[in-house]
Image (cartoon, rainbow, N blue to C red; front, side):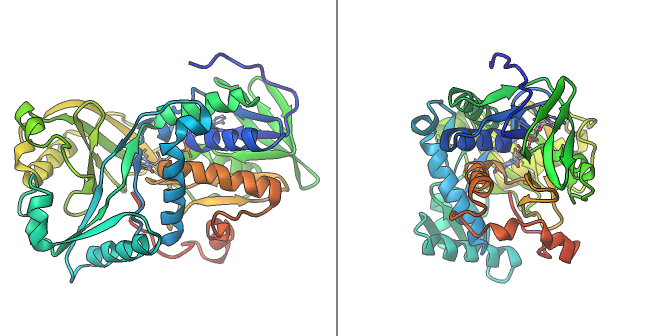
Length: 400
Ligand SMILES: Cc1cc2nc3c(=O)[nH]c(=O)nc-3n(C[C@H](O)[C@H](O)[C@H](O)COP(=O)(O)OP(=O)(O)OC[C@H]3O[C@@H](n4cnc5c(N)ncnc54)[C@H](O)[C@@H]3O)c2cc1C
């Protein structure tokens, strides 16, 4: 638990939002620059999408090598979190597999990812159909797939753990972390950021980073810019596998999608199995959504899982909750200076932001201090793409 800092009247940089993006940015800014950094969070650290995240760390992104590079860089950071930050986080390795058939679209995506990971020297294995039953003995009829691409060093962590770790480390570096305080608006003078107004007083600053997750669009409205983000509800169950299943399959399950792609599964800490929806079309208000999965969804989900892994048909339900994705039309991030000088936005992370958060903090730090970054070609994340076309890059990728 963090003690409460005092809201300063001036700070070089104010970060709005204490999710994984705001806290990662606070960490990198405070460890690599002399800037005064203040993070303002309206509730508690990791109480938005981050706290509900499945926190899967994978590198396979089909042919989108920019994300594979960032995910790999970020995963190395998460693996060394304690050395880098002095804080310990939960972290497990668990391979992720994408099954595919040669004549289907998902098959092409899986193969493209295989090519990208191979070219980047990220550990990856392609199993042919006849090898699948030995690799994945718990999955029924797994040899109906032509192949499986295993992202061998994928893993998972915990969103609340990582965001709180980043926030504590940022404070150790001298950053101010304010919780329970809401930023009401951004103040602009002569086309430059002049400060923020909060419900506990004003803070003068030259630079503001809006990392407010699904609440970000309202800050776009402050500066007359529409941030194209839709907020959707996702439903999560944590299952308890039967004891004999755990004995038979100590690593429980690979991380993978259920047939159809709208669901995914991964092991959970403490021998559980997490099953969740992915990219539902159910748009919600992030302040008022039903946090209990629907009865129909629970039935459909357990049925689908039972068809895929028959020995899990009798798994009990240990926990259930919902969370929200905030997605741009093309499901790609926005990481950019937008509007007045000194105004940066980091948003639209949909269902795949957690794994990229260290790279996002690094990139924002570079953009704020240098105006550019060496890590990747950050123009891919520019806001301009929506000024050219409302659909941005023009396709919504299958990004978990
Ligand atoms: C169910 C679910 C599963 C997911 N699974 C994965 C996964 O397996 N792998 C992966 O990589 N990603 C996953 N994601 C995505 C990932 O969790 C998100 O992309 C990431 O957490 C977004 O972080 P954020 O900091 O942008 O937003 P948030 O965590 O939502 O943080 C925004 C913060 O801003 C604060 N805030 C808002 N308004 C104000 C204000 N006016 N003043 C001050 N503070 C304010 C909020 O209280 C909140 O804490 C998942 C997400 C969900 C919901």
